[in-house]
Image (cartoon, rainbow over all chains, first blue to last red; front, side):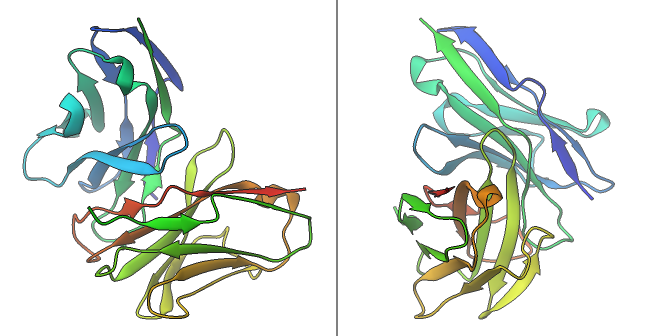
Amino acid sequence: AQSVTQLGSHVSVSEGALVLLRCNYSSSVPPYLFWYVQYPNQGLQLLLKYTSAATLVKGINGFEAEFKKSETSFHLTKPSAHMSDAAEYFCAVRMNNAGNMLTFGGGTRLMVKP
Amino acid sequence: EPEVTQTPSHQVTQMGQEVILRCVPISNHLYFYWYRQILGQKVEFLVSFYNNEISEKSEIFDDQFSVERPDGSNFTLKIRSTKLEDSAMYFCASILIQGSADTQYFGPGTRLTVL
């Protein structure tokens, strides 16, 4: 079964600094990969997704992620953090041969310091 | 922009009571899901629903859980006899097409507290 690991349950950065949130997956075949964001008291909102078209994926709010098959990684980055980026971020994987259920990582809470 | 809605936002119940969590998926979507997140833990898949029947379910989704789409718009999750460990945030999701890279859209969640 596929699994997702997010290293670091909490990440703190200063405003304007690089954001790097790590995600590794286990899969024997290339999966579909997603990053979702959850703001306080809100649902899960899609940031971006990898669907095998391009390894570097650009999402909303200036975020991007790079699929690296050799490292089984899909890390999320943003060059310059804003205060409004403070939220919980979830990496998720869906196998392309197993229906549509998502398997989520444990989540990373991003804190942005002024 | 279309969105998935859920009611109530917060439900408090006594252990052993039945609860029904409600969701209105995006209107032209065909597949519907329930996930849950126990405080401090991962978001976990419970069940998927297509064409008025369950298409997949996890080991969490035992006999105390049931889902239905009673009227073509609502999608409900029923827990027959709640336990303390059912306390969690429950998310509904919907998607247009299965077996593709389409996006699952999530609702804001219902926080269930079992006392």
